[in-house]
Image (cartoon, rainbow, N blue to C red; front, top):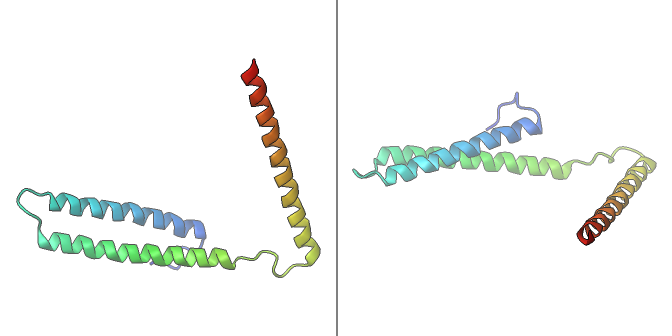
Length: 115
């Protein structure tokens, strides 16, 4: 699991990324061991599989916590209605500007295709 000093979501997700890389290394080690011409070593396979399962469980728990935290995040829960509406209006304005930019890009692409 993550240590208490890892307090930011980004740090926890970076740690998950490192654990995923380690899980892939473990899986590769087991594959190599199974392909060993002298036959797989039981203790090696057991140790790698045990570590693999522990890391998968830790990754799963961390991601579940991060998703839960993201779903519970409500920045406007304790603020007044007008601030919330203003933010929603700003989002709508941005969506409109993006749609206009997309239309302009499409027009430019069509123009360049005719040249």
